[in-house]
Image (cartoon, rainbow, N blue to C red; front, side, top):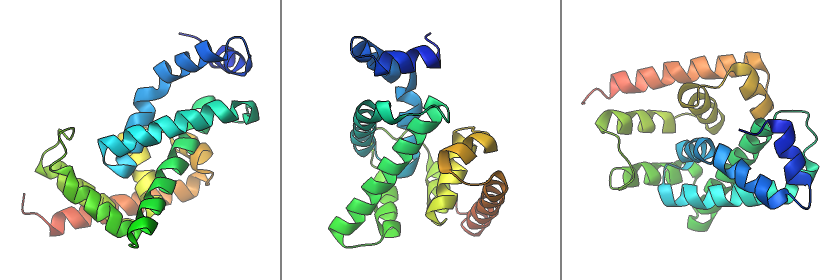
Length: 183
């Protein structure tokens, strides 16, 4: 496994950029896929957004200054791409992002790539009731197992604000699940 500095160097090198990019995809594809999937909930959309994310990374690697980890920078791009996708979808359908997310949750049960059960559907519905920022924080902390410090870099928010947002999200999700206990 290549270390981050070597990978960045390979990506910025004209001769090695293609090989470096393939290594980057191999190392980060799965983690970025699941991060995006938690935001957009749909396999096909996730694949499209992941592809756009890697294209954006490739085109903008020369702008990466190394002030954060490469992984953090890529997560920020993936997050922004996923949110942009949801905003565009809402605008195209002339509905709110919440309505788009509700439609995605409804489609989740018929998604052949969804391997969850009814409990996971209820959890997704609970997460969907949260404001977008709390959804991101909850998904990244709970499912992505990120530290608050890492989240702070990715989301460009203070650690204290993230802790508060996460704990409020957990309370809201718990309350939603308790009030919808028909499982």
